[in-house]
Image (cartoon, rainbow, N blue to C red; front, side, top):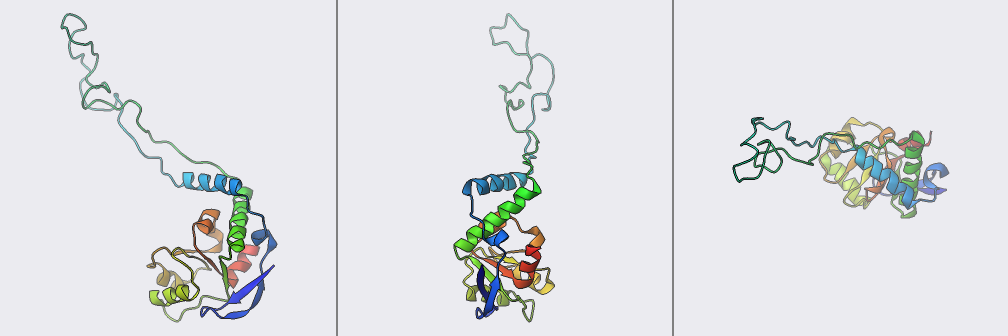
Length: 202
């Protein structure tokens, strides 16, 4: 399968072959939902915590005797039904992690890239060389390529490009080894350099 190879001015430089294993898969929405749900769950820190009746400050003494006062019986001022008492069923620190096999993550990436390719949202550049580390230069390229509000640039580590792209709202810049299905699906256009595509194909 072939697609256009563009330069940063948006002009066609020829054609380039895309690997079928990455861009020619029939996307499965159910499978992608499973993987994305796991990815987002793994981003949660799980550190929310409340104090139970054993952790709040306060005496352990019985407020008043069991019988004879005419009031309801109570055993502790730290009970959840008291003001300043502990919380009965609040959150405690725990892991939300969902383990996914490496093969499954790779397959999900192929499904995501194929989905973007089918919607004509994949752009392959011969390179992303800019003269200076200026935000405006990257912004102009994105505007020329009609990359939308949340573009994703997949490129090898480049100090100038990294510096010039970090202040653009909505832009995500990743190296090929960090690419994942969520980042692909959460973007308007996926811009991949020729060098990065070769690394992804290995």
